[in-house]
Image 1: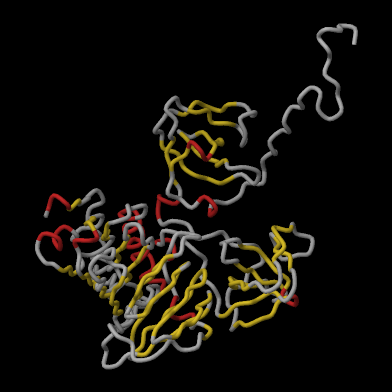
Image 2: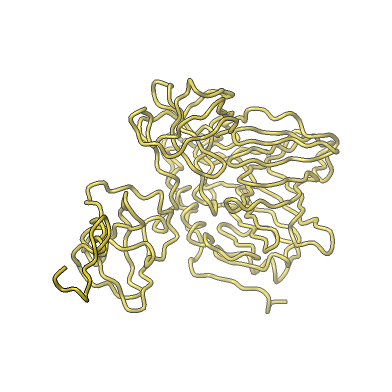
Length: 450
């Protein structure tokens, strides 16, 4: 069996057991300011261990989980960065997030095709594979999240988050509920119910012969009896505006596809509405959204007359609020300028390396027509500083020199859209006109006098 188990130990153990707590700590809770640095270490270690991992494997990013079967498979998943073929694992339980004791449950489930999704276990979460024979492993599972809240005020609740690649829906079953998953859904249990929260996209929730459409910014509850989450005892409830505390402090940078968390509820277009790059009628138009479209709300401007929204396609921008049909709760995210998307934790969000067998030229500005600053060899590490507003080029630092490289030659796990845009660069020069175009006649080589 061990021939099918691959273990990576490149990152070592999480060293957060010895933390000096401030006076803000009491016996039951730790302020967010006091424990946030230790939690950031947990996220960074987990990210370095497992982001970009292959499909068909389980990857442990934190403390050793409890695994069935015990023995070789369980031991192989004990260290951060360890990976085991997903079909070998029958059940897994991750430990609570308790940075004061060094406990950190963070595990990724990445089933292989034909089902494509990533499951992220955060904190005290139990997951068991209950897929019938002849179906892909972990297409059906029973999930239970711990009820105890973490002591760290910067930590999220215990949660299981499932996410599909953008535009690639899949069908899975969680706690006896069929999900037509197309986006990102947070799952939590407690009080004889499972709560499904839409964080991006739209998901069809089906049980007891009835279905509900779960939109971004909503939650749906399914009832159970006696703490048995394997079989629901009723149909999904009517979708409600989601309670923001359920997703508070969620480390979205750990998702394979990081997303900005939505506000409660959604909006829809009664007629065609322009999606703009900033909250102003003078701002550029990204696209015109037709009537009847539903959009997630990410935030608002201070005046509240413009909303920052996201389409199911992932496109984001601003819409004038009076032109929209509102079905929202309180919008707590308030900002003047469009926020950047979430970035990876630690150096993963700021570094890359050159992939060009013959090396590549570092340019003064983002285009091959600009002067060369230096030659950068294949495999050279670079620090990511920003991105171009005009094309797919990134601003980097290499050996103390700052310049621009095409994104095509930079290998990175950073979220490029989350890099700051450098507007202090000239646009690429226009292409040279082809002789004879734009009304110019080609000379006839047979008539030199023409």
